[in-house]
Length: 157
Image (cartoon, rainbow, N blue to C red; front, side, top):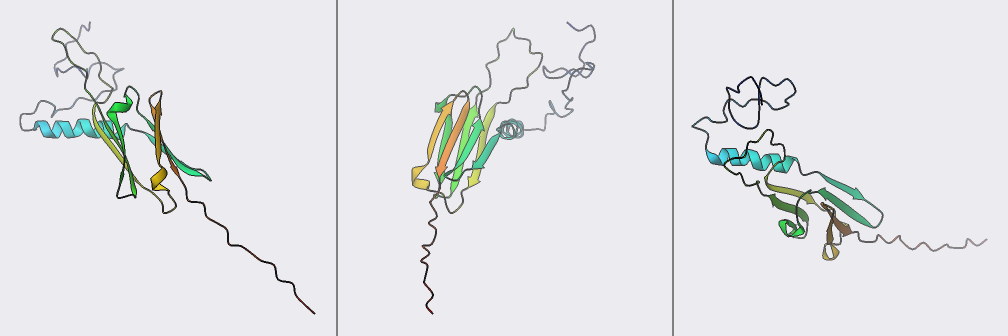
C-alpha cells in the first residue's frame, strides 16, 4: 500500500511512482469523450500488439502471428477476393469483481485485424492454417515457375 495517495485515481497509473511506466491520461474521465472513442483506443492497442512475421521460402509464403492466450475458435483466417489474406480475432477483457484492486493493466483486449495483399504467385486454393502454443501459422504455397525449356542447336560448318 502506498503512503502517497493517488489524486488522479484509476487503477492503471500512479504519477508518484518513479518505477511506473504508465502515463497519466488527463482526458480519461472527461465527460465529453464517448465510449466509442475509448473502445477505438482499446481496439487499436490490440491491433498494434498483434505481431506477424511474413517470410518467403522457395515453396511458400509463411505467416506467423503471435496470439498468446487465444484459442483457435477465437481467431479467423480468411481470403478476400482471393487476393488478400486477413487474420482477425478478439481478446476479451477480463471480468472485474467489486473487491478487486488492480495495480497494473498491460495486456490489451479488443478486436484485432491484419491484412496482407498476396503476390501473384500465391496458390490461394491451397492455403493452410494451424495453431500451436499461441502462434497461428498460415502457409500459402507458391505457383512453381517453370523455367523455359532450352534446346541446344548444333552449329554446322
